[in-house]
Length: 180
Length: 155
Image 1 (spheres, helix red, strand yellow):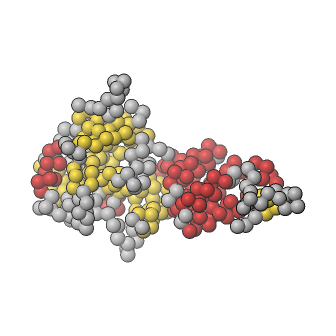
Image 2: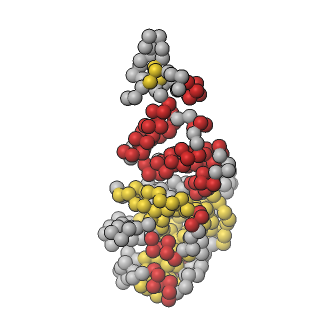
Image 3: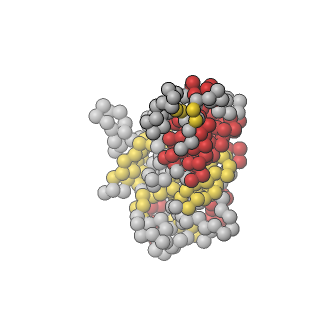
């Protein structure tokens, strides 16, 4: 593991970061051995490259994000998504957007990755059951087909959704689905 | 009838019948299939609590009016052991109730962008994953009557 004795270069970061002891090595001529904060970024990049989500989250937690630039946040969000660390991507986007309120890319990432949000409540659709009855009764008649259903009645079927919507324009009372 | 806590507070504000059927010509396993509406496009999604986001088939993306300004570009999603390139969007998604209230929720959706040599492995229109989609929806299944009870956590 890459280690560094505390140096002037690492000092500002090290003061803001908790000391990390490496393999129980507390002293080298009386000095505490610390991981170079830059190495956390290297670890983050390496974890992203190797697709190791757990290592990515560990490195993410060790980094002092208050000192990172908008570009570094954006890169880390991309890496997190690539690695499959989706909640870390959200945490990074939220923190980055709060830290850089004028950065459009981070604001967009925070908006897109935010937890789901209730928009409104709508009336129930009483035709759902009729359409399901049709799907149960006819699933073997239209295998792999797109179908358009209205209130339990088949309007049209097709191999492709685009062809089907050309015949039956999209409407809130028509269910478009595929049958298996 | 909707579900309630002992305090009388509603657990669910809507109930919908679901279909329990295979979602592919290659699989025999049955899935819980829900009626949803993406914007104004009514379709179906199967519930997959091990998946992330709301995942749309490329065919669906072609008929939706998606705004490129609401897209995180060039993202990759590991799906069934393979990496797929695509975009992350914020979309309005309605969970349709047959009784009670339907819920319109803003979710994160992944829409694959396939290269000519790629094949999207999912034959079904959509997948409702947990993180980014179902994570704020309280739900319970009644397998006997094939009903899903649901309510939003802010209910």
